[in-house]
Image (cartoon, rainbow, N blue to C red):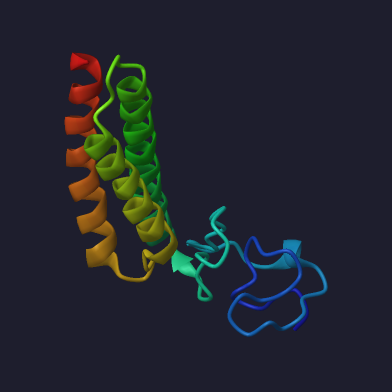
Length: 135
């Protein structure tokens, strides 16, 4: 049944699950599942995620991205000081690397990990934001 494969909703011309060619993806039934297309190569899941999981995963990635931005701002602020603290700069740069790695490895199918990362890093972002404002 060309164009009627159940996993082709929102997919260009191949099924995400089985790579079956679909003549017209617009004929596919609209479901509550979406394919995650994250800008980080290799991080997009091979299976289709439910809309809720996709949103949670995107939210966690966004929070991680905001944490990276916060550390970047702190680094810029520190570098403008008359005598920047090299240890502090190294620690913050290291944290950026840890977070960037987590963005690449966060398993979108592990709902518990996604939730934990989003909560943990949302708390961190609030703390970093305070630090930025206090400097």
